[in-house]
Image (cartoon, rainbow, N blue to C red; front, side, top):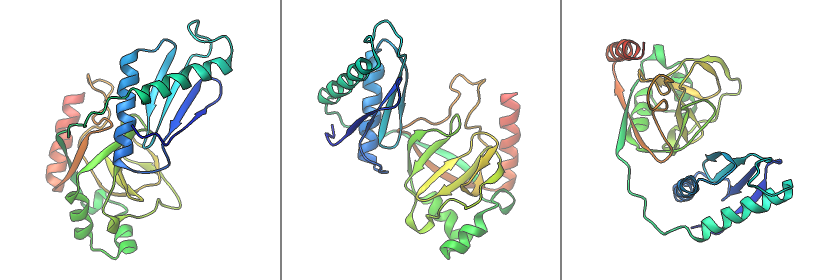
Length: 242
């Protein structure tokens, strides 16, 4: 386990361990391994454990009877748990997950920012699509919205910054680029990522047994589909979820 980390209190009910502000697959694997180890311990008083790109946060009940009598004690209690967990983390090679294929239609009617990305990168739309589909992406974390998977890294040739002015409405299923990240909006929402396509899949469905389609550590590859196939699969998805 990587030993270069910082542990900080987040108010009176959370604590974070931070391995550095990086998009790094090795560090993220360590974060996910720590996440699973802490889950297995079923620590009394813990409300949530949140893995991110290169950090992990434990949210706890500051008034839980099993914890210390004051907030300072709570911090020490969980700091010790984190340090011991890291110290005792077994060295285990993460088995590569199966690649999940995500169909994406890059038709201009579903890709409002594809021309903008083309202008910023000096690449034709077809080249951007090819580069976007060529890579297998790691899901680093879930956040922002239920089921929003932050994935990376993209080919640096299609890396573009977030839009200066977020769009007031980005449709669910929209596939975006921001820096060297790519992601899929699971719900209609405002958003500042550059939208280059849309998937007919529902990334979040509260009615499903597994409401979130992707989890941290998953591997994803995008597959280009036609507008007709997108429409057909959208109808199927809507029918099955209704």
